[in-house]
Image (cartoon, rainbow, N blue to C red):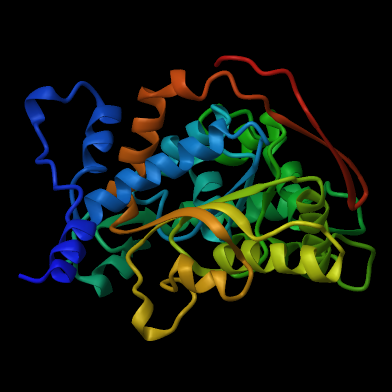
Length: 357
């Protein structure tokens, strides 16, 4: 063996895989810490924990954006997501309308029922039951939810508003400590849904539109969402992104940093921390599966960002990740919260006093 080959081997063979020892695991924090020394998606999930903890403990106090897509509520992740907001693990939420709608559906009494993917779907239709893979939801309760959203919208001022302002309005009207939108409203965490009408919330808004055609009414101003996002980014010396799934939330948050940097003169870089849990893959060229490395070519992710992309089902990966963060909370608590004070589409951001939960 030549010296060159020997040197090359030594350069690459510096760290060996460490087998997981389940007899030495004391909580999810230790499990994911051990994952960092393994391979395949376990290592990526373990690295995701490291990335998130780095963002939580960075003295520059990054603004952490959480992007949500997929059947997360049907998968049983409602409380996991609610807790992430309540504990201060994230500062801003960007979600598909469907995730938020199913949160509201449960707030007004709807439930997700255990079903089977081999069900007779024609028979389910006759029973007014909808299927989300192996989960059933109540179509009659969905209609009740649609009409409830439409009725609440009647109380919103007859003027244009962003999805952030509208969702805060909704959240403030639900006395449900288990709710995502209600917890975000109580904690002052902005929630955006840039494709809000591509969900059953859009049905409720259409009912409002039907009742108020030709009259002053609430108007969803999607472009204002962009401007409000840029305001938050402008107040952020550093940003971090956590993507559960992909879709519009991922693309919108990533585009926001580009828009802030070159269209609005923000002096900064791409997102400094980035992690994603997704079942999508990059080789079809779609955004949801595109790698965080690819986003560096667009300036969306910083060239020096710490990042991890775990290809696994969020119904498995997210509870493990949030559970590990809670298990290791002494590392990042107390963390100051951001206080957002809105005047129209302009916001002032300040740090609230840090406190333990």
